[in-house]
Length: 49
Image (tube, rainbow, N blue to C red; front, side, top):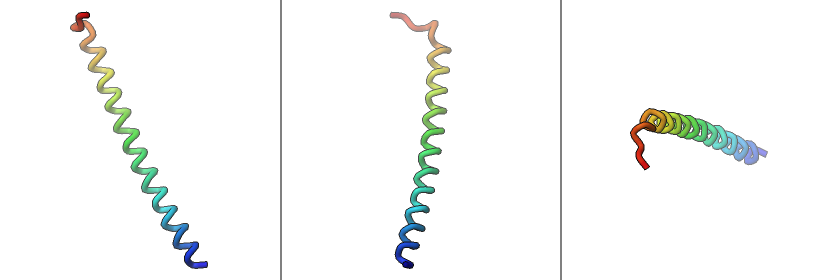
């Protein structure tokens, strides 16, 4: 019975850690996308095709 509790505890801790990593990665990706979009809009007049 105790082995099941240990397995559940480690799985739960792993899930929480993975969730935190995913949130941080998502926020970082969103910030980079906003910055790149703002740069494109700022410099759109300088583009020549």
